[in-house]
Amino acid sequence: KTLMIAAESALYSAKADGRGTWRFFEPELQTQQAERRQLEADLRLALAQGQFELAYQPQVNTTAGTVTGVEALLRWRHPRRGLVSPAAFIPLAEETGLIVPIGRWVLAQACADAAGWPAGVRLAVNVSAVQFQQGGLLSDVLSALQASGLPPGRLEVEITETAMLRDPQHALATLGELRANGVRVAMDDFGTGYSSLSTLRSFPFDRIKIDRSFVRDAETRADTRAIVRAVAGLGRSLGMSTTVEGVETASQLEIVRNEGCEEVQGFLFSRPQPAAAIPALIEQL
Ligand code: C2E
Ligand code: MG
Ligand code: MG
Image 1: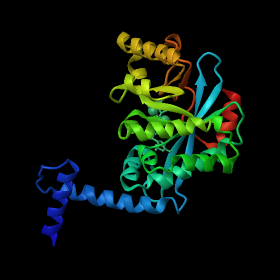
Image 2: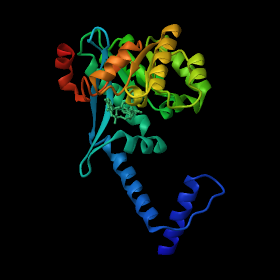
Image 3: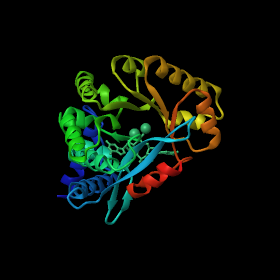
Image 4: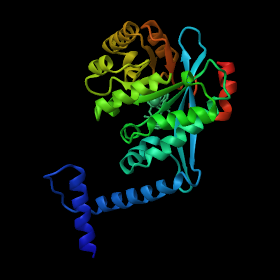
């Protein structure tokens, strides 16, 4: 029995790396897989048990200093593990398809929260490629808007480039339908995927979010600043706004403002906060 489990574990790991590979059995591997199965079992219960929460991070206009939008970020408060980061469970939620009901909950909850905030403030919600592919995204978005009363123009859906590349035709169609319904669409983590420029050409985005890896280097590297400047210019020419993610210091803010980016998001202004803290934050920033 133990031998069977070991063999299965090695097979599983080889499969995960693609066809035509093989693996020796390693005890460590088996622990990892048991861990993963446990996490998956926990994830299946999390929604029903109300373990998800949303944190919100303001997006700030670089010249006016006002809050123009707020991004909803998913948090899992696990009964034993404590707060689990999205990086640790979203890939698993995608593989198991659980991201579809979870994403539906995120949309409904975020729209309900945001409906009570000032009318000038947008709500940004992250969606996964799997939500696109399984087809229900548009109807989930429309139901969330209807139930909350949030005007469609205040909602912005964030998608990563990699998400679209999996099934570009379908992604393009869904983006078009969202926009036809007045919902805005942003490309998240710009600059980290492949063929960024051709994606911008074929998809009708309202906003480009420049990945925070560019900000991190902007203080020390002129080439990185040149890229930020070029993307901001490209956005302007294509009629898209640009938001820079991960701004942590005043000097980073100064740089991206000078390079022509209109909006920033980052720890400099605020870490992600519970919904209850947001109205005061909007007033105060
Ligand atoms: P993202 O959409 O690019 O979100 C920005 C991430 O950067 C957030 O991490 C945020 O907390 C973090 N961040 C913001 N400002 C700073 C800063 O100044 N410095 C640093 N170091 N980090 C900063 P978080 O909340 O851990 O989320 C990670 C990713 O998980 C998100 O990246 C997004 O891709 C995904 N995600 C989060 N919520 C959802 C969701 O509801 N649905 C889906 N499908 N994905 C989600
Ligand atoms: Mg995002
Ligand atoms: Mg991002």
